[in-house]
Length: 304
Image 1 (spheres, rainbow, N blue to C red):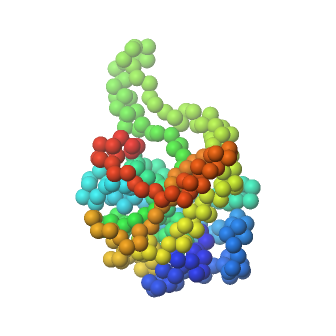
Image 2: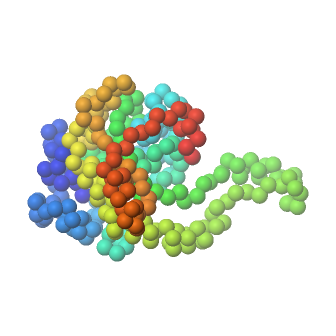
Image 3: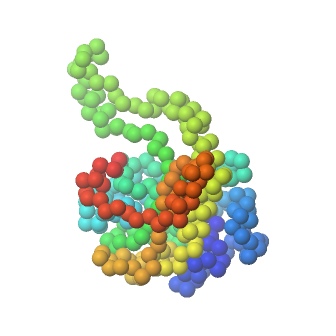
């Protein structure tokens, strides 16, 4: 939630477009010439103040309800009715500290999700808050204009469990006239019954590995620096006015002058251990990601 580093591309972009990034004591007390490793050590000591947490929660509320999420996926257009998705609940937990790093968990409860939707929602949420952009910018992103929203790193993305509420209601009615011993009787699908086992598995196998990777790699800081170094038009929708300026709008079939280039490295959820794997990781980190053109059938097959 720390604003862009003074002098960075995004910081300068915000200034030039009439948005003064919020003053932050983190940058006021540090050495402006410090390298990234020094900045990272200080960032890990940083703790989110209550007002920043409330800003995060207020912005997250803008996701609730039914919206056109065409800007939060890939290969979809505004007029595509399948872009309408219903978010039942979005909750932002209190920060917790593990090791030397503070973590904040964000839970999205929706009927279904499109390709990359949650990663783009998280990115928009974090970038909006750390640049001082108002929550109302989310309403603009649901509108007809197409903009670029980068994907948050895949590390940390976790499906809690699927919920089959409609199915449960349907079989409850179907089972009314049946005895549980009959072969046609259908048992409900309820993952909540396995909550204890699921939580134990996450605490033992998933969360520790995720924290270990972040501690070793600094993936989220690397992603944030890649965002802050960008000074093109793609992120001009981050501003204090809560509007999408014309320069940030993507026109279909029109080549952008300086498009933001995402890195494959941030799609990874694993960490290399062997020398060969580390060499491959460096190549992936330096490689630019090019989205594969997918037809509608393939997109639907990849969505949940």
